[in-house]
Amino acid sequence: MKRILLLTACCLLALPALAQIDAYTTWPYYYPDFQQGTLILSNGQKRVMPINIHLLKGDLHFVDEKGMIQMAPAGQFSAVQIGEDLFRRVDGYLMKITAGPDEKNFVAVRYLADLQSLNETGGAYGTPATTASTQRITSVDMPGFVNTNHMEQFQHRESGKKLRIKNEYYVVINGKAVKATKKEVADAIGPDRADAFKQFLKKNKINWKNEQSLLTLFTFLNQ
Image 1 (cartoon, rainbow, N blue to C red):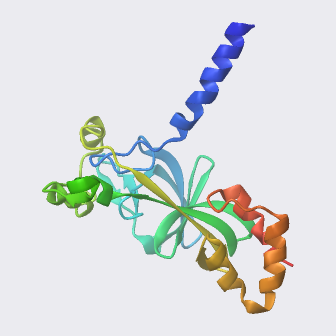
Image 2 (image 1 turned 90 degrees about the horizontal axis):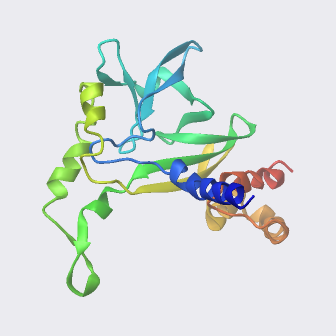
């Protein structure tokens, strides 16, 4: 019995690590490898191909029939389905979507690589200091790995520096993306419903960095 409990505890402790995005300067992608996904084209047609999300620019990359990494033009697709993950372009950036009441109301999360943290080291009195590594790191953002061989890039994916990933949360209200903060959402709602919104927040404790909690806002927004 003790062994079963120990194994269960180990599995639970491992869950956050499994959910973590392991991205590097040599592999700035959301997934550890390209995943077979469905590209929903702007004309309604669908294409299935190996795809991944580039974390520096929020672009969609795919592997072509020659094994080369290519970028899908933003105007040619409306959504991307990879397993249970759904991505849509919000404010010009490909974001992961948590479905809301309809297609114009949902929660979106933008995942992006924090390059600035890689370009800083401890300076005098603990203050950050930009180093000479800036040129090497920012050069990653320019080519974006387009027209490179997938297998060669994959084999060296962990040879670079580990990327810190930042999550930015948004509430999309009637098609408009609003930063998921109390102030930004209150401003979007407007002064006419300000008092009612304050009362709603008193009864509903919103976690502004949790997709499921943010969905609770639509209970108020749809009233």
